[in-house]
Image 1 (cartoon, rainbow, N blue to C red):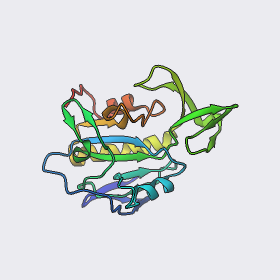
Image 2: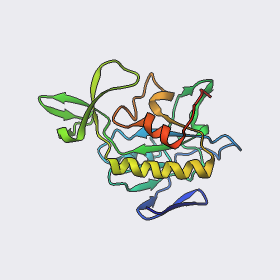
Image 3: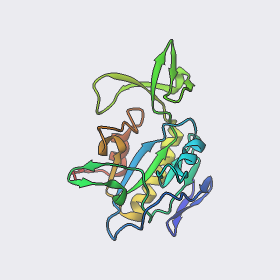
Length: 206
């Protein structure tokens, strides 16, 4: 997959640009140093994009990456998105102004009902699309929608580019900066291994 960043916009095959009205100002000089990984908790990338571009919802992210690897960019990378909400890691608060938000198309946590695995929005998922795991902020086993390896590979490719282009030094899950209210990307996404591959070395609290 050939990708490049020009004028803060991803260029290459399989990329859509759909500008969200939900955005802040430009980052302050030197502020951008983090990528936040989310899942969409929706039935499709298209439904997530609809939410993230709805002016009444007041939420956005820089990228949505579909299960087929389709990339949709909703904000230039030099513009603040509204994806982190109330957030804290170490002594830093309010991660919108420090981070690029990547939303990965995934239904999230599932509930087992009579042998079926059901999302919060009522869609059933087959067992081959489900993984059982313990969330980093929980103690009990739960069910989660699988991330296809190709989708993870695309996320990794994009993150490598962002790290190089914007001198990113931290990759965090939404669950890490808002542990009391968020569980994404959850145990189905290999966040610790992903982070170790892209940013080897210690990662002290900011």
